[in-house]
Length: 68
Image (tube, rainbow, N blue to C red; front, side, top):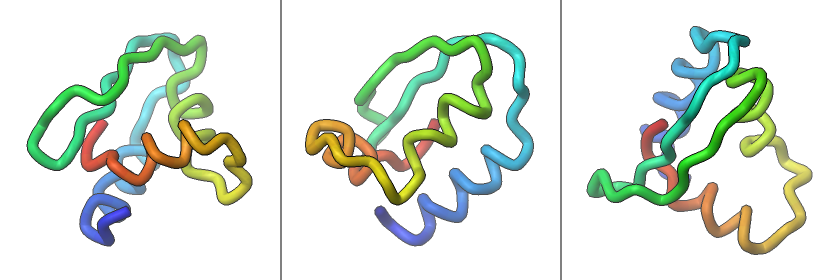
């Protein structure tokens, strides 16, 4: 993941709500990569950025995320 994107996402997560909601993951050029829903947005989105993600499809997605 791009260091600038990582810092941006860390800032987003630190201010994110724990309420239910919908999230969009966007690529470098603003292309839509994924849409998800969660009962707790902060917990769900944070789960993508832990070091223990094993599924190759999820790893590929996370490597392309520039914004949420």
